[in-house]
Length: 384
Image (cartoon, rainbow, N blue to C red; front, side, top):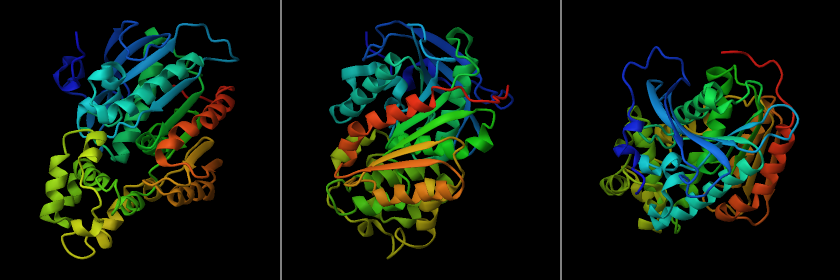
């Protein structure tokens, strides 16, 4: 029997009257059998529907997949909890990791490679002895590139995991954040907004890989090359996450048509479908409408380099110098901002690695950093 898509599964339905419930409240849970995951992991597995907030700050609910290793924790102190942000990169709920962790080969060929990589990373994290929370941080409206929605989804997922009694996550467990690419965007969003949104959470270590630090730089980098189909997908995502920005008015009829064609699917299919070799200027409603002025400022303000906030824990960033989608210069700018605001940051730029190759190449450094920073529990954890 196949796995039901989220939009056809009653478990995902957002309950009414959520406003008064604390953020991170577990609203619904279900235990998954050992063979439920496409990549088996030696863990007890639950899906949790929890209260969170969308990109506009309105009460909603999303799902996270919580894995707790079956083997006893052999390290010092409590078993760590790692929130792993998969590159959800979707404008449909079937792009969400709670579905892709289970769906296996039913996912389209253009997204299965990414899904398989993330399933392996989650299983490997369990084998290291970590509890792992994998949040559907884009929420039920698939608000890809919505920084506030991503931050809320990640941080409320941690709250939910800690409060879910059957999982027995220790309140003093060291907490780590890890994500690459779109997952790096969600991780950066959570790290930068945590001190205001979830100050009671004491984060021990943060890993941001291949982070989309400046969305303007990403649009410019993909313009005119084989991956230019990222442009309409990214613009459609911004339109969905920020309806008040009226993105369509800055774009011509051709651009809006491309956006509409990819507005209800996952990034893999959108990038494969084209258009290829199109320049960003060809999308503009008037010269400079996207590359200058108020739209350009809006995109920067929607990026980690623009929306502000300082991580409260040490940060490890890894990036390929040959990243053809997300230029390393933007990651360097973000790291400089973090340092200027007092954060401890290590940025490792791996020479010659592309966006795709760095995802695998950078894993060893990310794991070593998390192992080091999750070995000692945080101090002064505040009860909620």
